[in-house]
Image 1 (cartoon, rainbow over the protein chains, first blue to last red):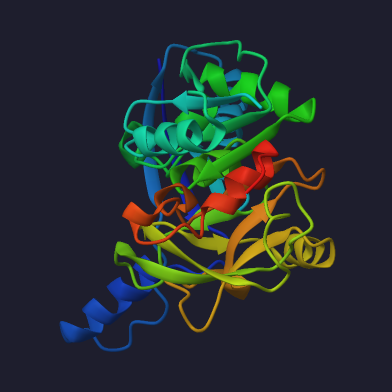
Image 2: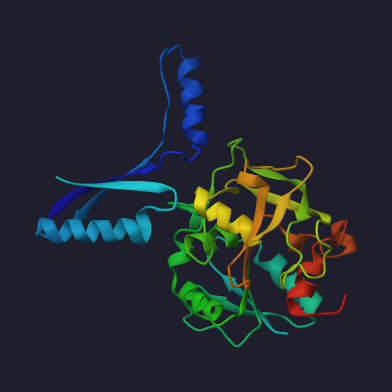
Length: 80
Length: 222
């Protein structure tokens, strides 16, 4: 079995109102010097596949087809 | 003219859409379920609003990948008219039938109010019964209506007249780029918009500004 983590983040230049709200909340809590905050998503997956190369190709296809909206998001695949 | 309404779990404006199409066209639309792989022979397919699949992952993301959406894409490719309202618009962009993306409202708040809508292109099947530049009233009710597209896509949309509806008179409720409220496909048969024209079609609704959209699409005399 292969365990993988997929991280989906907003592309540069895409407005992130949630990140902005978190940024303001952090400064409200007294954390000074926090620059830009961008919010993303993490997916942990378990695959029956044992071949890492094949697993990586599958994971990228999953991102392209469902897990990320590539109009606005980037993704990174990490295999444990 | 015949119509069909797509049904998915979590939609909640389906009955409003069915009522509007029935009242305006004089016949009840066919309904197609998420797992249906074929859509009957109709002139207009409507995807209503709501919260399909609980808005999990991204609004419209799961719905866009259901079998019925492949059937919608096939019909759209053949030139059948498709309208997606609110969640229906989100589903159309997630399915790749319209460009861009709909993001969380800039205010981070769910907005439920009436907005002013300008007809930015009156030369479409859906807007031909309106005057160019006409301003109409429509309700909106959404959390993710903040339209976004990259600079190239946006320039193409604006250049080709694919921006059909724009929030007018400072009523943009969600921070949408260029005040975009609705766009149409390059071929002019797939329309997506965040406001709810189906909820303003008769006096009992407090106005009928949305009625002409369906009359235009269905080719029905006003």
